Image (cartoon, rainbow, N blue to C red; front, side, top):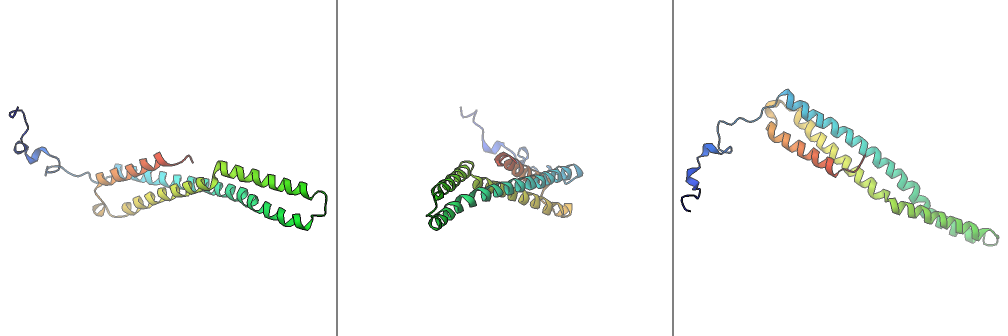
Length: 167
């Protein structure tokens, strides 16, 4: 059994890629730059889509939230002013019913949370695009190692695509 066990002194540094001095790093060439620039363009497009979606949800949040908050206040104020009228109770009930419906719809669809998620996602895509653009504006000799940058950029992009809500 001792003869079968691997001994550490039998492993020479040449068999390990970490210590392999003949190994060359991936150099920046047009093919790699095209891939990275394609990711940057897709990040920009995704950021725009998510920002538009967030603004849509913000409009819905405001359109449903303000009336549902203001209708009871207006109904209460007008109820005291017009308390001598016969139809005042009906109008107050209708205002409170509409307020409850708007509040229920807003709570059910949770537009506030959706707009926040889309704004956050748009920011992450824009941040990745800026990271890529910053690295790509440097001369090739001054950039990060190409293989390391490709792994970093593609992993971040894939992770964003997996966690991003539908745009």
